[in-house]
Image 1 (cartoon, rainbow, N blue to C red):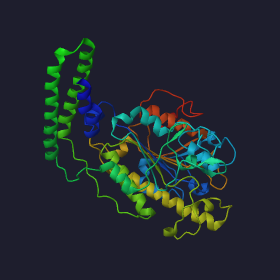
Image 2: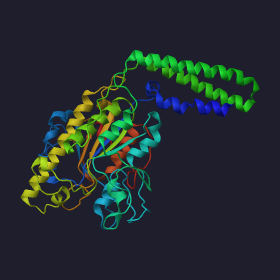
Image 3: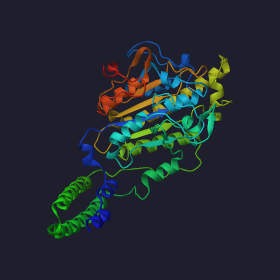
Image 4: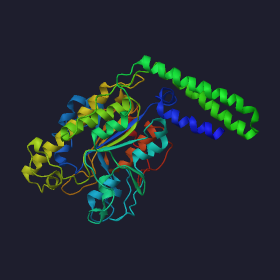
Length: 433
């Protein structure tokens, strides 16, 4: 009978249905978004001049001007573990972007990598929200078969890894993402509607309590202890229901239109990521602008040739100009996302950007030579105070980017000290000063 009761009304079921106000209040709200772009940049057009808050934005970074106060440009960071191996450079580098481990050379199913930054957080904090983490992208890709010089497609199509053999599949359709986030929800629901639903749910809890009261005299000591733990959980759910009644209704836009072009898809994904964070559906997101070595074309920018081919510019002026335009457009989309986070409040009245760490990364720096010693990195948001934005932060050459990830885990999310990846053996104190 107790088992039947647990099946009928389990706490995880109620937890998945109800907003997380009381849960969030138990610990500071911290969020992570990783915004990945493929193929690197023409680095002379990327690297800014100057120091500290007085630095000058480079041609590619110029679109950051409207959100300059919210972002820092980080130089000197590299990913040496990604460079370990032969051939398949984009596959190795993409898979290692958030893992910072060398990957196994294989085009078969026996892939082996490590756990990525986002999934370390998902394992530690994902239980606080209905969706532990979101993996998103603009290009589909399968985790099977060979994609680059003896390396599996799983490597080149995924930056999020739940474990060495587990690449995380990504959603690449804004429509599918909308359905995942909001299926069955009415955007016109009012606080009064929510209070009526709360009354109905509380009546169910009252019924369960009556059943428990009649069941208790027939139970042994061990079962009574289990039942006490169960009823304690019910009391907690009841408190959440009452707290929830006055919480703001989570607003969201209508379902995105089908068959969006690239700019439309980026905007739709940006909006949906913002809404998912604001509604506390998830606090951990990775977004791949394209798969590693992406061959996307940019006719809407008046550019001929595909991105990967252009990245191997061999100092050709026309190719470099095209790369400059593509890079500036990518940064402009990122800047629009940062502005959106800055102006959006979460259910507790905080600016999303004040509590979110946003990382802009690519698998390589200079695309022409597949350089991984100087990566293009932008760090946005203060993440609750661990990062002071608005600066150019220059680290010594080849500083492991894994140290940035470790600092984020410890300083923003409060995880215990832990070596991250193959070389994340210390933290970067300069981020908070």
